[in-house]
Image (cartoon, rainbow, N blue to C red; front, side, top):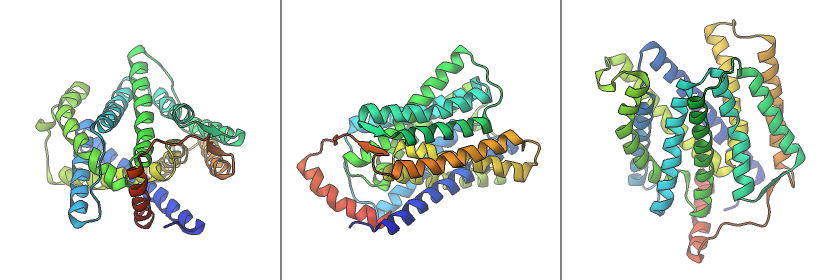
Length: 333
């Protein structure tokens, strides 16, 4: 089933909105959980997120909404390695680096993702598409980058975080296309392995980072409610990320995804006062949003972003099953 352009645009907008709402929501809940209730065990919490996501995929499979699918173990292993290094690297980078350098590292994921698409997918970008990405980077940089100090171990952690995150997001799109997997199906393969590995490693890593033990935390009703709420929202965040990257690409997800950064800043000013709201931050927001609009327009034009006669290798069986499942995906997503 092929969607009409207007229907596709509505589904695309709904996917982005789903991702923005869940991502901003989980940031707010996690800030409260860590800052107010002192639950500083980020890696273990991420493991719990994937455990809840695993439960969701099992329920959906039991209800018949997720069909059985195949993902080779070698591909699954590569994805989980990239994804887990992304999580661990980001947590360590945040601890070892200044906020300014951490934000610069996050911004560098866009050019790295572009490089991966150019090298691995033979993607070509038009001049306007490239310039619009530069404008987004400039705007978000003006908004978020303040003090910038670099040290050797912090740089290594940031380097690992940037490349592993970019590879993980590239692989989301790659695996969905190559093996004709829906977002639900891919999560069904990856979430259980990520949950078990992060819950195994998480308590030790969190103790190394915080010098606190997760089992010694003073759990109470309120903190447990926030942990459950965080895990519930994370299901939507994980699913919406896979939907968005599957429908678009890792680069588009990164570029438009910086709208979440802008929204978090605005909500911070709204809830916590206007002391951080100044002219250069507002100017950065305006530049970033203008760049995102320009990127959306430039990349959607003919030649704005296209593959140079390169296609993924698929077997005849994958092609036939892929056509059938692709129709289902368009109806469900």
